[in-house]
Image 1: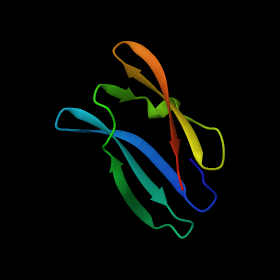
Image 2: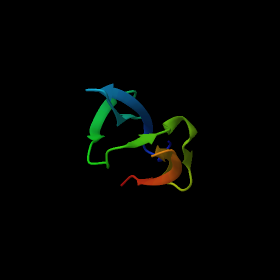
Image 3: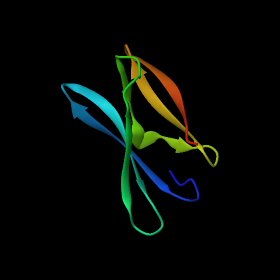
Length: 78
């Protein structure tokens, strides 16, 4: 996701048998920084970051699966 000043990379990483959504940013100078993991998400949601779409300058819609149903999550960056 491109926010103008940074490039956000969102991906799932398995930690203790649970997939957590991670966020890394790449600055224009090439510096990579790790943002806090999005931990406080309800359990049971499996995010499909590969199919996420940027809908505005600071918002992204990511599909997720919860109990065999498809739902969508809106992530907003400041």
